[in-house]
Length: 140
Image (cartoon, rainbow, N blue to C red; front, side):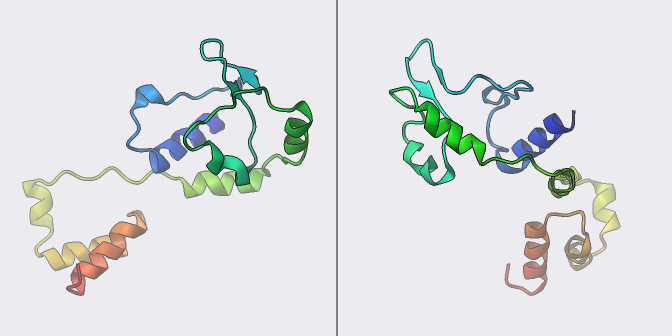
């Protein structure tokens, strides 16, 4: 499924340090709002400007208003296929790092050549390319 692939790429990009056991992907969304059976706390859809309110306690003590939830959801639109494709493309996984070995070291006669290759390789993340450029300029 493209959606599951998209979510896996999001996780790899933005949550790489989160243990896999703490991450789950739902292909069918849970009912929201809903009351958690064990805690009695409520889940709800939240407007982006209210998200900071839930940093310390990401739940509600009381059920959310049905009208407020409906109003928030009524303004949502599905993503257009071209926009989704562009987002998926932007999240292409970075190539796996190559382990240092005698063969790879021999291929790079000089550190300068290696840094130039990294800096000019479009498949390498921009942050690493910038670091290579800084190192070449002696500012790393």
